[in-house]
Length: 272
Image (tube, rainbow, N blue to C red; front, side):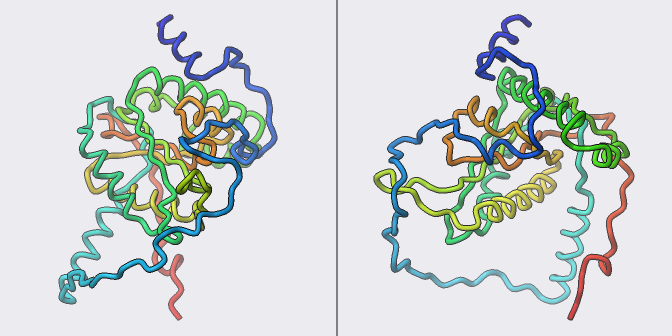
C-alpha cells in the first residue's frame, strides 16, 4: 500500500492533495502546462498541406432491400436501446483486441476537413488508474460541495451518484479521450483542426455504440477541472484537452441501473 501511495503521488506530480475551491470553469480553458510534442515549433502559421488535389475513388456501399433495411434498423435500435450508463463494473479481464477494435471503430467518425482530431488513451496499469481516481475524486468532491449548486446535486441524487468513483480502480480499462485543439504538421507547424470538439464528440458516440455491440459497459464522465492534471500524468501534449473519461468492462454480477424511461419518437423528432 505504501508503495502504491508513493507512486500515486509521483503520478499526480504534487504532494499537496488538498482541494481548494475553484471557479465554476474547466481548468482546461486556462491550461498552460506545456508538454511539447516532438518537433513542435513555436506559434507558426497553419500548414497549407500537401494534398491539394486529393484523389477520389469510386464508392459503392451495400444497398439493402426495403424489408432488410427495416429489419436492420429495428435490430440496431433494439441493441442500442439496451445501452445504459453502468457504474458497477466487473474487474474481469477484457481482451485487449476488443478494445483496439472499438477504438478503430471510433476512429472512423467524420471530422472537419478529415483532421481526425482525437487521441484515445487506454489505461490498464493499476497504479495509474488509482492516481486518476485520486485526482477525479478530489475535484469531484469540490464540485459536489461547492461548484455545482444544490439544484444540480439534487437532480443527480435520484441516480445515486456521488464523488466516490470506485469503478475507476475496478474497471479493467480506463479510456481517456482527448480532443486535439490543433495538429502538428511538417516541420512542427500548427495545423488547424476545424470543429475539433464536435468531431471528437461524434467519435465518442460511435465508440459507445461499438461498446454496446460487444457487450461491454461504461459510464460517460466529463471530470471538471481534472483535465490539466490528468494530461500531465498521461504525458499528453498541451494541444490535447480532455473531453471524456470512460471506465470500460463487463457489468458486475450485482450491477443495477436507474429505472429511467426514454422520450418517445414524437418528443424528439420534428418531420417537416
